[in-house]
Image (cartoon, rainbow, N blue to C red; front, top):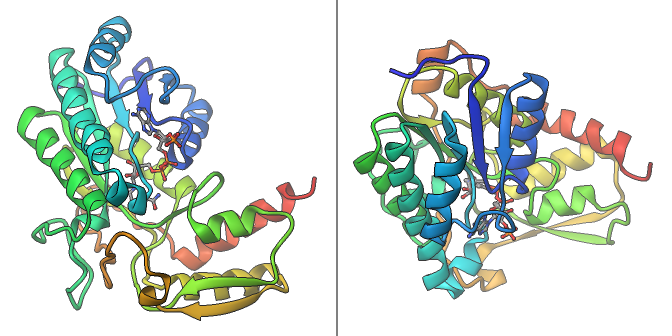
Length: 292
Ligand SMILES: NC(=O)c1ccc[n+]([C@@H]2O[C@H](COP(=O)([O-])OP(=O)(O)OC[C@H]3O[C@@H](n4cnc5c(N)ncnc54)[C@H](OP(=O)(O)O)[C@@H]3O)[C@@H](O)[C@H]2O)c1
């Protein structure tokens, strides 16, 4: 059993992404030593490089965030999505086992098909409707089959500094356009990267291995998110409700795929705050950082 110690060494893939940035903040604050890599330092689709890099650093914990996270890009570049999201994860799972490191793999609510009438818990059957979800699901299978000391953390609709979603980018922009399109017919959970990073730190300190759903509480559409942001930030942009079919996107989307979190509150006695409260904090952060 590998127990938490303050001298543990953490290794991050995809460290320049939204979740990577928030997690680095948490680790710095907690004085944990870490090695942060993104594609410039370590391309996870190159197994030889993954092998050499992990043998060199020999971390105690691998936080595996690297992915092609753009859902439509995965549909348009299926081979790349498979190489990075699925095979990249295969290589990391093999190396985690070889060097006896714990592996924390971040997965997605898009492993579900979105036809449920209630939020998906950790035990719901996987049935993705697009290549992003399928390749992330294959990544999950590799981690489960190869590693014993692993955590699979599924999350949904990240927002926070550096997040690439349409509305996160809109909120971060100092020059706001006159109109903002917001989807009104897809529903899921929202997750503030700062809150998720804290939860990941709680999980990785433990040896409570397994599958987790970690999201802020509550369910909404991007339209709900945009309207709540406007309430808080008072921007003048007009919000247009749009339906998925109007956008003609390359990848299908699950219509209703919120996550129900059961293992995390049971094992750690903690539930993440509502997405509205987390969004209020994010908007405060933006107000103090934009136009400075
Ligand atoms: N964003 C969401 O709403 C969401 C929801 C559920 C789950 N997740 C999962 O959460 C994790 C973190 O998401 P995120 O939003 O922080 O994603 P992100 O901002 O796209 O970060 C992922 C990082 O991985 C990098 N990367 C891409 N290909 C790579 C490769 N071959 N080798 C090494 N690095 C590579 C990306 O670089 P480029 O920017 O150059 O591509 C990016 O810096 C991902 O595994 C994602 O699947 C995200």
